Length: 66
Image (cartoon, rainbow, N blue to C red; front, top):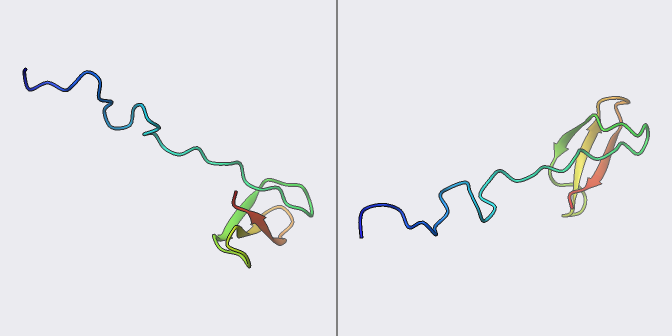
C-alpha cells in the first residue's frame, strides 16, 4: 500500500461531529422577553444555571444552561 490516507477514515473536521458545536439561542429575559442578553457568569446559584444581564431592560437573572 502507498503513503495515502485510508479512504474510510474521516479527516479532521468532517464526519463524527468534528465541526464547531452548535450554540443555543440566548435565553429570553423574564421581565421584557428580549433575547439581547449578556452572560455575566457561567455559574449561578446552582451548577446548572448561569448569570445573565438583559441589555434591553438592564435586569439581572439566572438562566438554565441546559
